[in-house]
Amino acid sequence: MIKVVTSEERHTVKQGPVQSEFSFSFADYDDPGNAHFGCLLVLNDHTLAPGKKMNAHPHHDLEILTYVISGELGHGDDSGQARILKEGSFQVLSAGTGISHEEYNSSELEPVRYLQLWFLPERRSLPPTREDLLIPRESRMGSMEPVVTGRGGNGRLKIHQDVEVYIPFLQDDREISVPTRNRRQHLFVISGHVEFSCGKQRFTLGPGDAARIQREEALSFRKTGEEPSEVMIIDLP
Image (tube, rainbow, N blue to C red; front, side):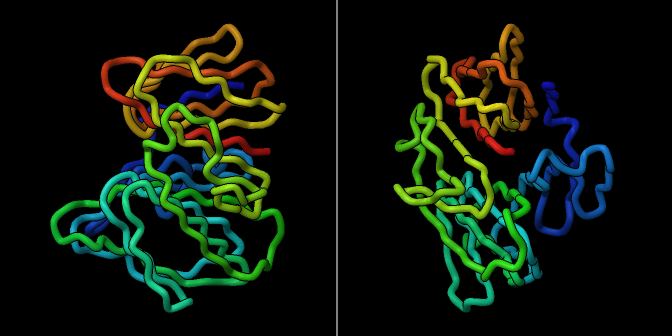
């Protein structure tokens, strides 16, 4: 099964200072046929206006991955320790038994764009934890090294679920292979254009487009067009 979801098919919401594109059912967007992909429940593409914030709100029993695409995102939570996540930063927040957090744009001049993903954890009632890491695009040039894994370590963030997240940055058109193990793969184009192949099938995707893949055939992709491309690939059960 391969399902391509175009950027235009996402649900767009403008609520106060934040504009969001929802890839799955979220908040007022309720589509029972688009509730999740495996253990991936949410993939929201947010742009938060300069100097604004999203008020504190609670979570529990979720693994929350945040990636700052551009700008700087402030983060505060129950630990009392605030963080400024710069462009290229990743954060895994394990909500576990319960945690409240808030996000804000630390710049008064520039918007901040960030992705936020929710995964079901491998087990409930874990102690809440938070870990963040700056991984600049230069170090992800054409790389299929995961930035987030269920194993953690070796310069990767740990998530309490059997998933691996890759975000290669592509400046040339060489083909990149994706490891496949009879699992699901979710491919999301952050910027630029890519062509991906699964077996004998080929698809072209642009910014905001996604492909949900559940096949055992070899999977690969490459940049097309003049501009660099940045792609998120999620391998999950």
